[in-house]
Image 1 (tube, helix red, strand yellow):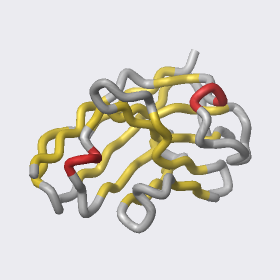
Image 2: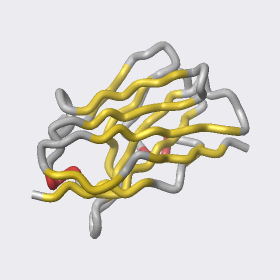
Image 3: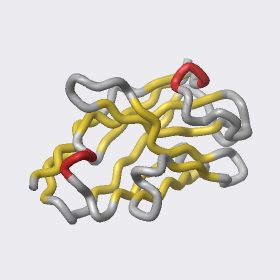
Image 4: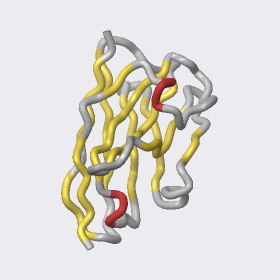
Amino acid sequence: QVQLVESGGGLVQAGGSLRLSCAASGRTLSSYTLGWFRQAPGKERESVAAISWSGNTGYADSVKGRFIISRDDAKNTAYLQMNSLKPEDTGVYYCAADRAAVLGIWYMATKYDYWGQGTQVTVSS
């Protein structure tokens, strides 16, 4: 069974940066697509970014140019570097793993097989 644990969330002022980590255990995820999603209070979960086993990436329009997704397969960990944060980036951030190696429809939550418990990100104005 795969377990995903997010960390790195917190409170930051607008314009600041945070780096989220997603550590996996139970299985090596080097052949998985790894994704990040977020959910703001009262809103549906939305896709943020994803990275395939080969390093291909996908980003939501709202975060392009500000967020960078990466992975370190030696550490079985995915990262989300978030820069120029805005109050609308506030929410619980979840990482997810998909057995499919290619990005495909990376933005669809139903595609993913495993999920973390989430980490809170709050951006103050």
